[in-house]
Length: 462
Image (tube, rainbow, N blue to C red; front, side, top):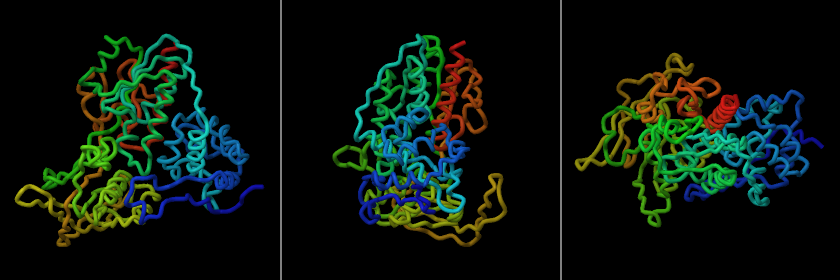
């Protein structure tokens, strides 16, 4: 019998006063009973509008129908027909702006909890089923993938299924890209990412770590000396942006990239068991309003900061972070100082950060993005005492590949120019994800990796 409740089943989670002191996953996932009940809210619409909102075209109504019948493993198999990272997507994709935004149930109530159901199905599979993965028959062609983030892993998996000999080159010592170094353990446990990667390895994908393409090996060398038939560049956007204000070189000032990498990939949250200390101090300010800013602020709280501030120049309604992440941050005692903007960072005589000067803002006319432009209110400056600052205002692609690769077009933002298939100006070189779009979402990067894999196969099959 259909569940006509206008409200989705809530996600079980740790108490906020407990979870803000540990790095265990915040949400604990649906039980079988909750998952079935939620799945019965799906109307199995004839036109399936939810699929239109999914960048990797997961067969959403079909997998949800299987969940409603209690056929959880069959539901998992349905998802992985198009999505090779369901446990990841179920946790970090902004479903509310994609598949769930198209859900008919959302017209007069809340959309079906598609993301939560995807996570449940993936977790059920991991807990109860031993993967039996076979290596596809080789087609005799080789493809190199630069970067092991979501776009690279997706491209590698799709190409491997088609019989290509795929090698992924990763600059860090651990594969996973932003899934490993950029998203905290409490949102995306690292063992889940590594499990997904182990499935790719079982399928024959080779992963070479500690290889910086553009320095250790050039893109041109991959084709000319290593004999690859095509290359996919999915190296992400790992170059941090800065505010350009006085004091950014003080001790105690981090880019969000460095801060989260120290905590996540270098296991700084396990200090002193791991020799990666992360200086925090009593008070931390995070500049920015996106998901990365929320991750940095919530991580700082877990590392012992008494006061953690999100300083953002627009208001609550303009915050670009997911509503769920903002809600969790508020519950975890993160203080939002909205309509404020930092003007300078203040240090002591030894070069350590001790405060930030902020100025109050008001919203004026809309800018080119359509959002109302923040305007400073003269004479409203104030100083906030802080020990640590984290700058989380965005990233751009590292310039190394573009500087060392002949014939590769780059746009004014430093991103590789590629069409909707991922094809670049350089023959047999494709690109996708943040290295093309600038910092975006995991699922959009995966969609780009999937499109490029299809295009590479089409080109090499001629």
